[in-house]
Image (tube, rainbow, N blue to C red; front, top):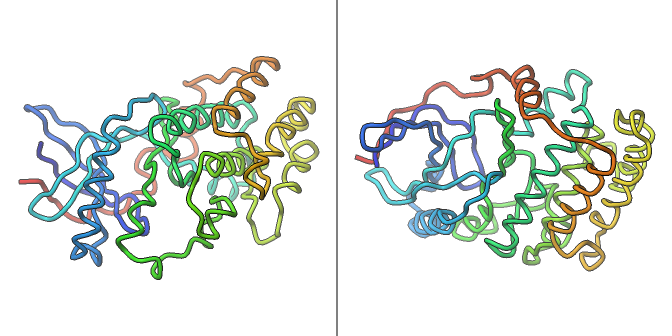
Length: 304
């Protein structure tokens, strides 16, 4: 496989993600390519860990999980090639909506929530203990209505960099126990899922400077949101489903994301809430049209 890298799309603690064109037997595909950040490319342990991380992802196969196609070592270092979602991160969509003082519609919010839960439930079984770092920046909404979760267990690349360079306290979607240095578990993903769902419904992160607790946010869900105004009973039942999920005590939370997914699906069926891919994709495109948010092309590169 040969690929040509263009614009940088994302910067994480250890890796950069670029838009790229992959050529396979004369066909060209739009993909993402991950590489170590420039200042870390001399870290051979990180390069090896990135390749191993990519290899661990190749066998994953789920409609709501971003696929990894290949990982390897090229002339310019380690790389991982991923499926590219023609869309934008949920984090970017939420940021634009906040600036416009808008929120996701209840149907869009709950449709996206169900698909994220479905992906997280799959990952808990296919790649134990699960994603380990669910956050809006790793969830992509496509222009055709796709919802994809990206980069499960990307946090495993932190170890070769050194904990002194990373600050888990600044990663607010992590569960309290993981922020305190404990190993991630399926219950940790449940906590992250609940914060993301609450944020989509109320329009603001739970961890804002206003010191809103998860419990405060759940109360606001029924009284001060589109969902609460449109269907107070559904809002209350959703709050009841999510309340144990945001407990600081991991043992109180559901055992895994599959339990949350089942509960959410039951609510959506009961209240006749069914998402429409075309409507979701059209909405995403209206908020952030194709090309918005990309950096200028940074380089052309290839495996050859």
